Length: 272
Ligand SMILES: [Zn+2]
Ligand SMILES: [Zn+2]
Image 1 (tube, helix red, strand yellow):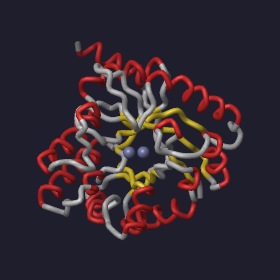
Image 2: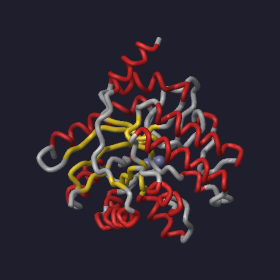
Image 3: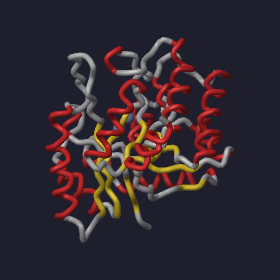
Image 4: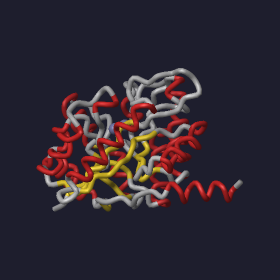
């Protein structure tokens, strides 16, 4: 039974602990064949805004160097990939694509946390209800760019305290499921969220109604540990997630294809 995880943070996002090597050793010890590092992406903002939850552009080189050194050091034991968990910020998307090409990023996952840019401070996990449709629309627009290997914690909005399974929520999630099924983009079953649900006794994400819907739409699921601590790579948590998804009969994807950012850039050039 091989395991893979493409959702791994590092201390550089200021809310994860442990050294990069500790994540690798923990992954090997827990039977992972692939460990993708996907720390929160840096952005070249148009303002002097600095985010407290991600690395700066100037810190990226060191992140890359560290990941590539571990990739080489442990190449006989595990496949290590250089990725990022990135937002969909329309105004910065061209910069991001160029950055992925230049830095030879293996893949991005879409973590749609903020609306338009974190400069504006609208966090989809704690937002006024009027931004609900903006969440669904930006998820779909983002996925259509082809830049993201999968959608991380699709049900992020369930973190809002007032949120329940309203009709408008169900309709929005239906749109996401339809689009992901159409584009063959996996939806992430987020194991950090599974741990949080358990600790708090409140079901935020993952949400069972979402996963029942995703299964009925013929979507693909991928397990994402969203590790912010090497301990988050725990194999029994991974297997619990797999067992739950299997009980729904949803297809589970274990490996993702690297994204060809150069190709995407060429396509843009043709469009112009
Ligand atoms: Zn995230
Ligand atoms: Zn994450």
